[in-house]
Length: 215
Image 1 (cartoon, rainbow, N blue to C red):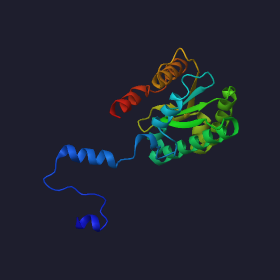
Image 2: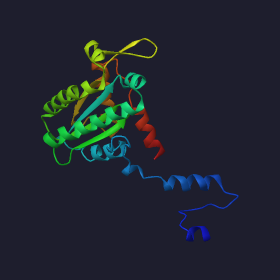
Image 3: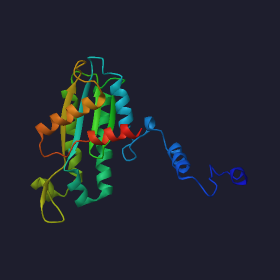
Image 4: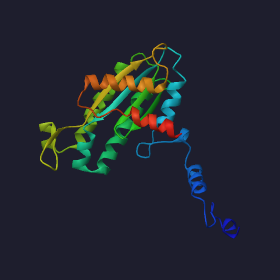
């Protein structure tokens, strides 16, 4: 009791029960519905799921999946801080483009360290992506040395070479009879992206499924 009077948030008496401790820790963590990506400040998968779930029965939405291909290579060469700076820039670009071309209930979210999701009602989503690609190209000039930019590749620590960061995209539009769940939508978009860009990283859908299972 004295500890609580002194301002301690909580305490547990010894000997303690491990199950009780696990529940106390879980309850102290932020709730998934409010989770955000700490690097970009963008909402994470729970918010993307909720936004997309509310639209599944409608015919006026589009999911834009943006994957930063070759991000691991950039991270290996320039380090974690530089990689985080890139992710923040991408988040700012997507927010800016959506402010200009999007609707009031559109959303930019994060699915993984290299994957962003945009949910929009704008039928001219191709123009939105084109604006983002142009701004990404301009911003990315600051991320490399002149020699790397001229060669359009990075030399990795082990001597191999990697292409520069490349945003690979896929678009899935509303289809009330095709998608039963939000994971179906994400999986369809990732499958489309992998067909268009075979060298991109593995799908994040299994990770999202695991988040559902744990919640």
